Image 1 (cartoon, rainbow, N blue to C red):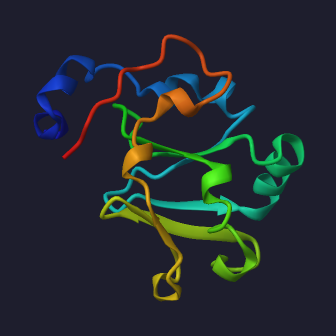
Image 2: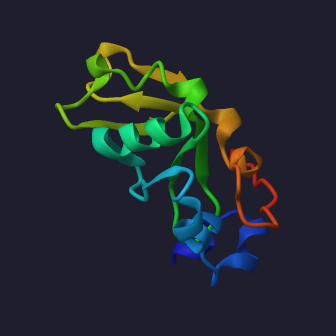
Length: 143
């Protein structure tokens, strides 16, 4: 059963949705959210939507990689800190960036090109989400 694999502190929330899942409609107005609920946390960020966020908010928004719909396992990446990864040379094809979270690093495909950056400090960093519904969840550390 899935819930027996969760940290003890998460068992009490097993019938609830994650903060991002619950608040997705409101949050997506200000932050680019993608779900990466596979074991390897694969995601895509598309050029069109990313360009729209940049046009509206400049660098003042977050890329949100939601790794679970059930509990809080989310990487909240301020675009200002990660824009150096999302350049044409790191695109998987002409319309998207594809990558995964592995070993506490965001890695864009193809991985051999070396487009990666540590993300541990951004795990469940809900305080970085501007205009986020309150109360914010308390961070849960995963080891």
